[in-house]
Amino acid sequence: MNLLEARGISKSFRGLRAVHDASFDIAEGSVNALIGPNGAGKTTIFNMVAGVYSPDSGSIAFDQRPIHGLRPDQICAAGIGRTFQVVKPFAGLSVLDNVMVGAFLREKTAAGARKVSLSVLEKLHLAAKRDLPASSLTLPDRKRLEVARALATRPRLLLLDEAMAGLRPTECDQMVEVFRDLNRADGLTILLIEHVMRAVMALAQHIGVLHHGKVIARGNPAQIVRDPAVLECYLGEETEV
Amino acid sequence: MNRATALLATLLGVLLLLPLVAGNYLLSVATLILFFAYTGQAWNVMMGFAGQLSLGHSLYVGVAGYAAAGLFFHYGIGPWAGLWLAIVLCVLLGMLIGFLAFRFSISGVYFALLTIAFAEFTRIGFDHIDWLGGPGGLFIKVAQRDKMDLLNFRGPPAMYYYAILVLAAGAFLGCYFLLKSKAGYYWQAIRENEEAAQALGINTFRWKMLAVAISSGMTAVAGVFYAFYYNNLFPEQIFHISRSIEIILGPIIGGVGTLFGPVLGAAVLTLLADGITEALAAMGWEIPGIKQVFYGVVLLTVVMFLPNGIWPALAKRLGISR
Image (cartoon, rainbow over the protein chains, first blue to last red):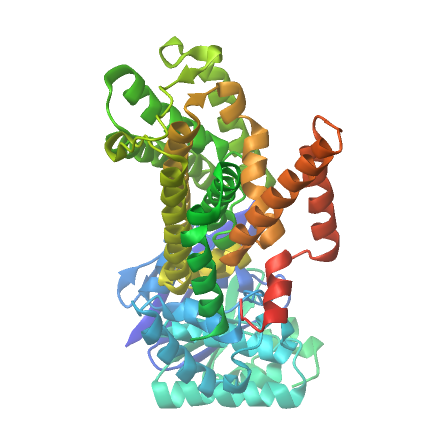
Protein backbone atom coordinates (compact mmCIF):
# COMPACT_ATOMS: atom_id res chain seq x y z
CA MET A 1 0.00 0.00 0.00
CA ASN A 2 1.25 3.49 -0.75
CA LEU A 3 1.67 5.72 2.25
CA LEU A 4 2.55 8.80 0.21
CA GLU A 5 1.47 9.58 -3.33
CA ALA A 6 2.67 12.67 -5.18
CA ARG A 7 1.00 13.35 -8.51
CA GLY A 8 2.35 15.91 -10.97
CA ILE A 9 3.59 18.40 -8.41
CA SER A 10 5.23 21.57 -9.69
CA LYS A 11 6.75 24.58 -8.00
CA SER A 12 8.25 27.74 -9.46
CA PHE A 13 10.11 30.55 -7.73
CA ARG A 14 9.83 33.87 -9.55
CA GLY A 15 9.60 32.10 -12.89
CA LEU A 16 12.33 29.60 -12.14
CA ARG A 17 10.88 26.10 -12.40
CA ALA A 18 12.33 24.26 -9.42
CA VAL A 19 10.15 21.18 -9.71
CA HIS A 20 8.21 20.25 -12.82
CA ASP A 21 5.46 17.65 -12.93
CA ALA A 22 7.05 15.24 -10.46
CA SER A 23 5.19 12.08 -9.44
CA PHE A 24 6.26 9.38 -7.04
CA ASP A 25 4.88 6.82 -4.62
CA ILE A 26 6.24 5.71 -1.29
CA ALA A 27 5.17 2.28 -0.12
CA GLU A 28 4.40 1.77 3.54
CA GLY A 29 7.38 0.29 5.37
CA SER A 30 9.92 1.13 2.68
CA VAL A 31 13.09 3.19 2.69
CA ASN A 32 13.32 5.63 -0.21
CA ALA A 33 15.95 8.06 -1.35
CA LEU A 34 15.71 11.10 -3.55
CA ILE A 35 19.03 11.97 -5.15
CA GLY A 36 20.26 14.34 -7.78
CA PRO A 37 22.74 17.14 -8.40
CA ASN A 38 22.58 20.44 -6.55
CA GLY A 39 19.66 22.52 -7.70
CA ALA A 40 17.77 19.52 -9.02
CA GLY A 41 14.76 20.34 -6.84
CA LYS A 42 15.20 17.77 -4.09
CA THR A 43 14.82 20.19 -1.23
CA THR A 44 11.84 21.84 -2.95
CA ILE A 45 10.07 18.48 -3.16
CA PHE A 46 10.98 17.79 0.45
CA ASN A 47 9.59 21.13 1.54
CA MET A 48 6.37 20.59 -0.39
CA VAL A 49 5.81 17.28 1.38
CA ALA A 50 6.73 18.85 4.73
CA GLY A 51 4.31 21.74 4.19
CA VAL A 52 6.86 24.55 4.00
CA TYR A 53 5.78 25.31 0.41
CA SER A 54 2.50 24.49 -1.16
CA PRO A 55 2.73 23.12 -4.73
CA ASP A 56 1.65 25.38 -7.61
CA SER A 57 -0.12 22.39 -9.12
CA GLY A 58 -0.49 18.69 -8.51
CA SER A 59 -1.47 16.78 -5.42
CA ILE A 60 0.16 15.01 -2.50
CA ALA A 61 -1.77 12.40 -0.56
CA PHE A 62 -0.71 10.84 2.72
CA ASP A 63 -2.57 7.72 3.72
CA GLN A 64 -5.17 8.51 1.00
CA ARG A 65 -5.79 12.00 2.41
CA PRO A 66 -4.73 15.11 0.48
CA ILE A 67 -2.09 17.06 2.43
CA HIS A 68 -0.80 19.60 -0.08
CA GLY A 69 -1.31 23.14 1.16
CA LEU A 70 -1.38 22.16 4.82
CA ARG A 71 0.90 23.95 7.30
CA PRO A 72 4.05 22.20 8.62
CA ASP A 73 2.45 21.62 12.01
CA GLN A 74 -0.61 20.02 10.40
CA ILE A 75 1.63 17.80 8.28
CA CYS A 76 3.46 16.71 11.40
CA ALA A 77 0.20 16.04 13.22
CA ALA A 78 -0.94 13.93 10.24
CA GLY A 79 2.04 11.65 10.87
CA ILE A 80 5.01 12.97 8.89
CA GLY A 81 8.13 13.85 10.86
CA ARG A 82 11.09 15.76 9.43
CA THR A 83 14.64 16.80 10.20
CA PHE A 84 16.45 19.91 9.00
CA GLN A 85 19.55 19.91 6.85
CA VAL A 86 20.95 22.75 8.94
CA VAL A 87 20.18 21.42 12.40
CA LYS A 88 17.85 23.55 14.50
CA PRO A 89 18.13 22.42 18.11
CA PHE A 90 16.31 24.32 20.87
CA ALA A 91 19.73 25.42 22.08
CA GLY A 92 18.71 26.69 25.51
CA LEU A 93 16.85 23.51 26.45
CA SER A 94 18.29 20.21 27.59
CA VAL A 95 18.50 17.24 25.24
CA LEU A 96 15.58 15.58 27.01
CA ASP A 97 13.45 18.73 26.91
CA ASN A 98 14.14 19.06 23.17
CA VAL A 99 12.71 15.61 22.58
CA MET A 100 9.81 16.18 24.98
CA VAL A 101 8.64 19.10 22.84
CA GLY A 102 8.13 16.57 20.05
CA ALA A 103 6.55 14.00 22.34
CA PHE A 104 3.87 16.45 23.54
CA LEU A 105 2.21 16.15 20.13
CA ARG A 106 0.70 12.81 21.14
CA GLU A 107 1.12 12.94 24.92
CA LYS A 108 -1.03 15.12 27.15
CA THR A 109 1.03 14.95 30.34
CA ALA A 110 4.66 15.78 31.03
CA ALA A 111 5.16 12.35 32.59
CA GLY A 112 3.93 10.63 29.44
CA ALA A 113 6.05 12.83 27.18
CA ARG A 114 9.07 12.14 29.35
CA LYS A 115 8.59 8.40 29.09
CA VAL A 116 8.28 8.46 25.31
CA SER A 117 11.30 10.76 25.03
CA LEU A 118 13.53 8.59 27.19
CA SER A 119 12.84 5.54 25.05
CA VAL A 120 13.53 7.52 21.87
CA LEU A 121 16.80 8.84 23.32
CA GLU A 122 17.75 5.28 24.16
CA LYS A 123 17.27 4.25 20.54
CA LEU A 124 19.49 7.06 19.28
CA HIS A 125 22.21 6.49 21.87
CA LEU A 126 21.65 9.91 23.44
CA ALA A 127 20.27 8.76 26.80
CA ALA A 128 23.50 9.48 28.64
CA LYS A 129 23.47 13.08 27.42
CA ARG A 130 19.85 13.82 28.22
CA ASP A 131 20.53 16.51 30.83
CA LEU A 132 23.11 18.42 28.80
CA PRO A 133 22.03 21.62 27.11
CA ALA A 134 21.48 20.97 23.40
CA SER A 135 23.93 23.77 22.63
CA SER A 136 26.79 21.68 24.04
CA LEU A 137 26.32 18.76 21.62
CA THR A 138 28.70 17.93 18.79
CA LEU A 139 27.41 17.90 15.20
CA PRO A 140 26.79 14.12 15.02
CA ASP A 141 24.87 14.32 18.29
CA ARG A 142 22.88 17.31 17.05
CA LYS A 143 21.94 15.36 13.94
CA ARG A 144 20.82 12.51 16.15
CA LEU A 145 18.85 14.93 18.29
CA GLU A 146 17.04 16.15 15.17
CA VAL A 147 15.99 12.59 14.46
CA ALA A 148 15.05 11.91 18.09
CA ARG A 149 12.83 14.98 18.21
CA ALA A 150 11.07 14.02 15.00
CA LEU A 151 10.63 10.43 16.17
CA ALA A 152 9.08 11.57 19.43
CA THR A 153 6.11 12.89 17.42
CA ARG A 154 5.52 9.23 16.46
CA PRO A 155 5.53 9.69 12.70
CA ARG A 156 4.55 7.00 10.21
CA LEU A 157 6.76 8.63 7.60
CA LEU A 158 10.11 10.18 8.45
CA LEU A 159 11.62 12.77 6.11
CA LEU A 160 15.38 13.12 6.42
CA ASP A 161 16.98 16.18 4.85
CA GLU A 162 20.67 15.36 4.40
CA ALA A 163 20.88 13.67 7.77
CA MET A 164 24.35 12.31 6.96
CA ALA A 165 25.91 15.48 5.56
CA GLY A 166 29.01 16.49 7.50
CA LEU A 167 29.38 13.15 9.27
CA ARG A 168 32.52 11.03 9.15
CA PRO A 169 32.15 7.64 7.43
CA THR A 170 31.98 5.74 10.73
CA GLU A 171 29.40 8.16 12.14
CA CYS A 172 27.49 7.85 8.90
CA ASP A 173 27.47 4.07 9.19
CA GLN A 174 26.14 4.34 12.75
CA MET A 175 23.28 6.54 11.56
CA VAL A 176 22.50 4.12 8.75
CA GLU A 177 22.31 1.36 11.34
CA VAL A 178 19.89 3.43 13.45
CA PHE A 179 17.58 4.07 10.50
CA ARG A 180 17.73 0.49 9.33
CA ASP A 181 16.74 -0.60 12.79
CA LEU A 182 13.86 1.87 12.97
CA ASN A 183 12.64 0.66 9.59
CA ARG A 184 12.88 -3.03 10.44
CA ALA A 185 11.84 -3.05 14.08
CA ASP A 186 9.18 -0.32 14.08
CA GLY A 187 8.09 -0.48 10.45
CA LEU A 188 8.90 3.21 9.98
CA THR A 189 8.67 4.46 6.40
CA ILE A 190 11.58 6.71 5.44
CA LEU A 191 12.22 9.22 2.68
CA LEU A 192 15.73 10.60 2.61
CA ILE A 193 17.29 13.30 0.56
CA GLU A 194 20.94 12.60 0.49
CA HIS A 195 24.22 13.43 -1.17
CA VAL A 196 26.21 10.79 0.64
CA MET A 197 25.89 7.87 -1.78
CA ARG A 198 27.46 5.55 0.77
CA ALA A 199 24.39 5.97 2.95
CA VAL A 200 21.91 5.90 0.09
CA MET A 201 23.23 2.63 -1.26
CA ALA A 202 23.32 1.03 2.18
CA LEU A 203 19.86 2.14 3.19
CA ALA A 204 17.46 2.77 0.33
CA GLN A 205 15.35 0.13 -1.36
CA HIS A 206 13.93 2.58 -3.87
CA ILE A 207 15.71 5.54 -5.38
CA GLY A 208 14.36 8.41 -7.40
CA VAL A 209 16.75 10.60 -9.37
CA LEU A 210 15.89 14.23 -9.92
CA HIS A 211 17.41 16.48 -12.57
CA HIS A 212 16.31 20.00 -13.45
CA GLY A 213 13.14 19.50 -11.47
CA LYS A 214 12.12 16.29 -13.23
CA VAL A 215 12.25 12.68 -12.14
CA ILE A 216 14.59 11.11 -14.72
CA ALA A 217 14.95 7.64 -13.22
CA ARG A 218 13.62 5.40 -10.53
CA GLY A 219 14.42 1.92 -9.34
CA ASN A 220 16.43 -0.05 -6.84
CA PRO A 221 20.08 0.86 -6.14
CA ALA A 222 21.46 -1.70 -8.60
CA GLN A 223 19.30 -0.33 -11.42
CA ILE A 224 20.10 3.28 -10.63
CA VAL A 225 23.90 2.93 -10.72
CA ARG A 226 23.64 1.41 -14.22
CA ASP A 227 21.10 3.88 -15.61
CA PRO A 228 22.76 5.81 -18.46
CA ALA A 229 20.73 8.97 -17.83
CA VAL A 230 21.74 8.97 -14.18
CA LEU A 231 25.38 8.34 -14.98
CA GLU A 232 25.42 11.20 -17.40
CA CYS A 233 23.81 13.83 -15.22
CA TYR A 234 24.82 12.84 -11.72
CA LEU A 235 26.78 9.81 -10.74
CA GLY A 236 29.17 10.06 -13.65
CA GLU A 237 30.45 13.34 -12.32
CA GLU A 238 31.18 11.98 -8.91
CA THR A 239 33.25 8.89 -8.32
CA GLU A 240 32.54 8.13 -4.71
CA VAL A 241 30.19 5.24 -5.65
CA MET B 1 12.61 19.50 50.59
CA ASN B 2 15.10 20.88 48.08
CA ARG B 3 16.89 24.19 48.32
CA ALA B 4 14.58 26.08 45.97
CA THR B 5 11.52 25.10 48.01
CA ALA B 6 13.28 25.97 51.26
CA LEU B 7 14.27 29.36 49.91
CA LEU B 8 10.71 30.00 48.74
CA ALA B 9 9.18 28.94 52.05
CA THR B 10 11.54 31.21 53.99
CA LEU B 11 10.85 34.12 51.68
CA LEU B 12 7.10 33.64 51.91
CA GLY B 13 7.28 33.38 55.70
CA VAL B 14 9.23 36.63 55.98
CA LEU B 15 6.85 38.39 53.60
CA LEU B 16 3.79 37.15 55.48
CA LEU B 17 5.09 38.49 58.79
CA LEU B 18 6.48 41.73 57.40
CA PRO B 19 3.44 43.97 58.20
CA LEU B 20 3.81 43.09 61.89
CA VAL B 21 7.18 44.80 62.09
CA ALA B 22 7.31 47.16 59.15
CA GLY B 23 6.14 50.74 59.24
CA ASN B 24 4.06 52.32 56.51
CA TYR B 25 7.06 53.46 54.50
CA LEU B 26 8.71 50.06 54.44
CA LEU B 27 5.36 48.47 53.64
CA SER B 28 4.88 50.78 50.67
CA VAL B 29 8.35 49.85 49.38
CA ALA B 30 7.52 46.15 49.80
CA THR B 31 4.19 46.66 48.02
CA LEU B 32 6.00 48.32 45.14
CA ILE B 33 8.51 45.46 44.93
CA LEU B 34 5.73 42.88 44.83
CA PHE B 35 3.86 44.93 42.24
CA PHE B 36 6.87 44.81 39.93
CA ALA B 37 7.52 41.17 40.80
CA TYR B 38 3.97 40.41 39.68
CA THR B 39 3.95 42.48 36.48
CA GLY B 40 7.45 41.23 35.68
CA GLN B 41 6.20 37.67 36.00
CA ALA B 42 3.31 38.49 33.66
CA TRP B 43 5.65 40.04 31.08
CA ASN B 44 7.97 37.07 31.45
CA VAL B 45 5.26 34.70 30.18
CA MET B 46 5.36 36.49 26.85
CA MET B 47 9.06 37.29 26.52
CA GLY B 48 10.81 34.88 28.85
CA PHE B 49 8.76 31.85 27.96
CA ALA B 50 7.45 32.44 24.44
CA GLY B 51 10.12 34.88 23.23
CA GLN B 52 7.73 37.66 22.20
CA LEU B 53 9.18 41.02 23.24
CA SER B 54 6.57 43.46 24.48
CA LEU B 55 7.66 47.00 25.24
CA GLY B 56 4.11 48.17 25.80
CA HIS B 57 2.83 46.41 28.89
CA SER B 58 1.85 49.77 30.38
CA LEU B 59 -1.06 49.52 27.93
CA TYR B 60 -2.65 46.72 29.94
CA VAL B 61 -1.92 48.33 33.32
CA GLY B 62 -3.53 51.54 32.10
CA VAL B 63 -6.57 50.15 30.31
CA ALA B 64 -7.36 47.83 33.23
CA GLY B 65 -6.85 50.58 35.79
CA TYR B 66 -9.06 53.01 33.90
CA ALA B 67 -11.76 50.38 33.27
CA ALA B 68 -12.13 49.43 36.92
CA ALA B 69 -11.65 52.96 38.25
CA GLY B 70 -14.13 54.35 35.71
CA LEU B 71 -16.83 51.89 36.75
CA PHE B 72 -16.20 52.68 40.41
CA PHE B 73 -16.06 56.44 39.93
CA HIS B 74 -19.19 56.75 37.80
CA TYR B 75 -21.40 53.91 38.93
CA GLY B 76 -19.96 52.82 42.26
CA ILE B 77 -19.33 49.37 40.84
CA GLY B 78 -16.63 47.78 42.96
CA PRO B 79 -13.30 46.49 41.67
CA TRP B 80 -14.26 42.84 41.97
CA ALA B 81 -16.71 43.30 39.12
CA GLY B 82 -14.52 45.83 37.33
CA LEU B 83 -11.69 43.35 37.41
CA TRP B 84 -13.48 41.08 34.97
CA LEU B 85 -14.17 43.87 32.53
CA ALA B 86 -10.51 44.89 32.83
CA ILE B 87 -9.26 41.38 32.14
CA VAL B 88 -11.59 40.90 29.16
CA LEU B 89 -10.59 44.25 27.66
CA CYS B 90 -6.87 43.61 28.10
CA VAL B 91 -6.99 40.07 26.78
CA LEU B 92 -8.90 41.30 23.72
CA LEU B 93 -6.38 44.11 23.19
CA GLY B 94 -3.45 41.75 23.62
CA MET B 95 -4.97 39.29 21.19
CA LEU B 96 -5.64 42.06 18.67
CA ILE B 97 -1.96 43.03 18.78
CA GLY B 98 -0.99 39.37 18.68
CA PHE B 99 -3.29 38.66 15.74
CA LEU B 100 -1.94 41.56 13.71
CA ALA B 101 1.65 40.62 14.45
CA PHE B 102 1.53 36.85 14.18
CA ARG B 103 -0.90 36.72 11.27
CA PHE B 104 1.23 39.08 9.20
CA SER B 105 4.58 37.75 10.44
CA ILE B 106 5.67 40.85 12.33
CA SER B 107 8.28 39.56 14.72
CA GLY B 108 11.27 40.55 16.80
CA VAL B 109 11.99 44.26 16.96
CA TYR B 110 9.00 45.05 14.75
CA PHE B 111 6.69 43.26 17.14
CA ALA B 112 8.16 45.29 19.99
CA LEU B 113 7.55 48.49 18.00
CA LEU B 114 3.94 47.46 17.45
CA THR B 115 3.42 47.03 21.19
CA ILE B 116 4.95 50.47 21.82
CA ALA B 117 2.70 51.97 19.16
CA PHE B 118 -0.44 50.55 20.75
CA ALA B 119 0.53 51.84 24.20
CA GLU B 120 1.41 55.26 22.79
CA PHE B 121 -1.73 55.86 20.78
CA THR B 122 -3.82 54.63 23.68
CA ARG B 123 -2.05 57.20 25.87
CA ILE B 124 -2.87 59.95 23.40
CA GLY B 125 -6.40 58.63 22.97
CA PHE B 126 -7.08 58.68 26.71
CA ASP B 127 -6.08 62.35 26.84
CA HIS B 128 -9.27 62.97 24.89
CA ILE B 129 -11.69 60.84 26.85
CA ASP B 130 -13.36 63.39 29.11
CA TRP B 131 -15.47 60.69 30.72
CA LEU B 132 -12.28 59.33 32.27
CA GLY B 133 -10.89 62.71 33.19
CA GLY B 134 -8.77 63.33 30.12
CA PRO B 135 -5.27 64.70 30.71
CA GLY B 136 -6.42 66.05 34.11
CA GLY B 137 -6.60 62.52 35.46
CA LEU B 138 -9.17 60.33 37.13
CA PHE B 139 -9.35 60.33 40.92
CA ILE B 140 -11.17 57.90 43.12
CA LYS B 141 -11.90 58.60 46.74
CA VAL B 142 -8.86 57.92 48.86
CA ALA B 143 -9.23 54.99 51.20
CA GLN B 144 -9.79 55.54 54.88
CA ARG B 145 -6.76 53.91 56.35
CA ASP B 146 -8.34 52.59 59.52
CA LYS B 147 -11.42 51.03 57.95
CA MET B 148 -11.25 47.92 55.87
CA ASP B 149 -13.82 47.63 53.09
CA LEU B 150 -12.80 44.52 51.23
CA LEU B 151 -15.82 44.67 48.93
CA ASN B 152 -14.63 47.96 47.45
CA PHE B 153 -10.95 47.19 48.02
CA ARG B 154 -10.49 50.18 50.32
CA GLY B 155 -8.47 49.80 53.47
CA PRO B 156 -5.18 50.09 55.33
CA PRO B 157 -1.77 49.65 53.62
CA ALA B 158 -1.43 46.12 54.98
CA MET B 159 -4.51 45.06 53.01
CA TYR B 160 -2.95 46.22 49.74
CA TYR B 161 0.30 44.61 50.75
CA TYR B 162 -1.32 41.23 51.34
CA ALA B 163 -3.35 41.51 48.15
CA ILE B 164 -0.27 42.07 46.00
CA LEU B 165 1.58 39.37 47.95
CA VAL B 166 -1.16 36.89 47.06
CA LEU B 167 -0.97 38.00 43.43
CA ALA B 168 2.82 37.74 43.25
CA ALA B 169 2.88 34.35 44.97
CA GLY B 170 0.01 33.11 42.82
CA ALA B 171 1.74 34.29 39.65
CA PHE B 172 4.95 32.58 40.70
CA LEU B 173 3.13 29.33 41.35
CA GLY B 174 1.02 29.61 38.20
CA CYS B 175 4.09 30.25 36.07
CA TYR B 176 5.86 27.32 37.70
CA PHE B 177 3.09 24.98 36.60
CA LEU B 178 2.81 26.59 33.17
CA LEU B 179 6.52 26.09 32.60
CA LYS B 180 6.27 22.43 33.52
CA SER B 181 3.28 21.84 31.27
CA LYS B 182 2.90 21.31 27.57
CA ALA B 183 2.38 25.06 27.15
CA GLY B 184 5.74 25.81 28.79
CA TYR B 185 7.57 23.36 26.56
CA TYR B 186 5.82 24.65 23.45
CA TRP B 187 6.52 28.30 24.30
CA GLN B 188 10.19 27.64 24.93
CA ALA B 189 10.42 25.71 21.66
CA ILE B 190 8.89 28.70 19.83
CA ARG B 191 11.30 31.03 21.63
CA GLU B 192 14.33 28.94 20.68
CA ASN B 193 13.43 28.17 17.07
CA GLU B 194 10.02 28.79 15.61
CA GLU B 195 10.57 26.84 12.40
CA ALA B 196 11.71 23.74 14.26
CA ALA B 197 8.78 24.13 16.66
CA GLN B 198 6.34 24.17 13.76
CA ALA B 199 7.95 21.06 12.26
CA LEU B 200 7.19 19.25 15.53
CA GLY B 201 3.48 19.85 15.13
CA ILE B 202 3.17 23.07 17.11
CA ASN B 203 0.59 25.54 15.83
CA THR B 204 2.85 28.47 16.65
CA PHE B 205 0.17 31.10 15.99
CA ARG B 206 -2.20 29.58 18.50
CA TRP B 207 0.39 29.10 21.25
CA LYS B 208 1.81 32.60 20.84
CA MET B 209 -1.73 33.97 21.09
CA LEU B 210 -2.20 32.02 24.31
CA ALA B 211 1.00 33.51 25.76
CA VAL B 212 -0.18 37.03 24.89
CA ALA B 213 -3.64 36.38 26.34
CA ILE B 214 -2.28 35.06 29.64
CA SER B 215 0.32 37.82 29.91
CA SER B 216 -2.13 40.64 29.17
CA GLY B 217 -4.82 39.14 31.42
CA MET B 218 -2.36 38.88 34.31
CA THR B 219 -1.16 42.42 33.77
CA ALA B 220 -4.77 43.62 33.79
CA VAL B 221 -5.12 42.44 37.40
CA ALA B 222 -2.08 44.53 38.30
CA GLY B 223 -3.70 47.53 36.61
CA VAL B 224 -6.81 47.26 38.76
CA PHE B 225 -4.64 46.96 41.84
CA TYR B 226 -2.68 50.03 40.78
CA ALA B 227 -5.82 52.13 40.35
CA PHE B 228 -7.20 51.28 43.77
CA TYR B 229 -3.86 51.54 45.52
CA TYR B 230 -2.80 54.92 44.16
CA ASN B 231 -6.35 56.28 43.67
CA ASN B 232 -5.33 58.42 40.72
CA LEU B 233 -4.70 57.77 37.04
CA PHE B 234 -3.11 60.04 34.45
CA PRO B 235 -2.73 58.92 30.83
CA GLU B 236 0.59 60.74 30.70
CA GLN B 237 1.93 58.58 33.51
CA ILE B 238 0.27 55.22 33.36
CA PHE B 239 0.60 54.59 29.62
CA HIS B 240 4.04 56.13 29.39
CA ILE B 241 6.78 53.98 27.91
CA SER B 242 8.90 54.48 31.02
CA ARG B 243 6.22 52.45 32.84
CA SER B 244 6.63 49.60 30.36
CA ILE B 245 10.38 49.80 30.82
CA GLU B 246 10.02 49.67 34.61
CA ILE B 247 7.97 46.49 34.24
CA ILE B 248 10.56 44.73 32.12
CA LEU B 249 13.69 45.91 33.99
CA GLY B 250 13.03 43.53 36.88
CA PRO B 251 12.94 40.32 34.84
CA ILE B 252 15.82 41.46 32.61
CA ILE B 253 18.05 42.18 35.60
CA GLY B 254 16.83 39.17 37.55
CA GLY B 255 16.87 36.75 34.63
CA VAL B 256 14.55 36.52 31.62
CA GLY B 257 12.66 33.25 31.40
CA THR B 258 13.33 32.26 35.03
CA LEU B 259 10.73 32.18 37.81
CA PHE B 260 12.87 33.86 40.46
CA GLY B 261 14.25 36.45 38.06
CA PRO B 262 11.29 38.86 38.10
CA VAL B 263 11.06 38.69 41.91
CA LEU B 264 14.76 39.15 42.49
CA GLY B 265 15.06 41.88 39.86
CA ALA B 266 12.14 43.83 41.31
CA ALA B 267 13.62 43.62 44.81
CA VAL B 268 17.13 44.63 43.77
CA LEU B 269 15.96 47.54 41.63
CA THR B 270 13.38 48.96 44.00
CA LEU B 271 15.46 48.57 47.16
CA LEU B 272 18.62 50.01 45.68
CA ALA B 273 16.87 52.80 43.79
CA ASP B 274 14.87 53.86 46.83
CA GLY B 275 17.84 53.35 49.11
CA ILE B 276 20.10 55.55 47.03
CA THR B 277 17.45 58.24 46.62
CA GLU B 278 16.86 58.25 50.38
CA ALA B 279 20.56 58.24 51.19
CA LEU B 280 21.21 61.15 48.87
CA ALA B 281 18.25 63.04 50.30
CA ALA B 282 19.58 62.46 53.80
CA MET B 283 22.84 64.04 52.70
CA GLY B 284 20.89 67.01 51.44
CA TRP B 285 21.12 66.19 47.74
CA GLU B 286 17.85 66.04 45.91
CA ILE B 287 18.78 65.07 42.39
CA PRO B 288 15.85 64.75 39.99
CA GLY B 289 16.08 61.76 37.69
CA ILE B 290 18.70 60.00 39.82
CA LYS B 291 16.49 56.88 39.85
CA GLN B 292 16.56 56.64 36.06
CA VAL B 293 20.33 57.12 36.00
CA PHE B 294 20.62 54.38 38.59
CA TYR B 295 18.38 52.03 36.53
CA GLY B 296 20.65 52.66 33.58
CA VAL B 297 23.80 51.88 35.54
CA VAL B 298 22.36 48.65 36.96
CA LEU B 299 21.10 47.56 33.55
CA LEU B 300 24.49 48.28 31.97
CA THR B 301 26.34 46.38 34.69
CA VAL B 302 24.07 43.35 34.50
CA VAL B 303 24.08 43.21 30.71
CA MET B 304 27.88 43.42 30.67
CA PHE B 305 28.74 41.02 33.47
CA LEU B 306 25.68 38.80 33.88
CA PRO B 307 23.98 38.72 30.47
CA ASN B 308 21.53 36.05 31.65
CA GLY B 309 20.57 38.09 34.71
CA ILE B 310 21.44 37.83 38.38
CA TRP B 311 19.34 34.77 39.20
CA PRO B 312 21.04 32.13 36.98
CA ALA B 313 24.43 33.09 38.45
CA LEU B 314 23.07 33.20 42.00
CA ALA B 315 21.23 29.89 41.57
CA LYS B 316 24.48 28.25 40.54
CA ARG B 317 26.13 29.55 43.71
CA LEU B 318 23.27 28.30 45.85
CA GLY B 319 23.18 24.94 44.11
CA ILE B 320 19.67 25.40 42.75
CA SER B 321 18.87 24.30 39.23
CA ARG B 322 17.06 27.06 37.31
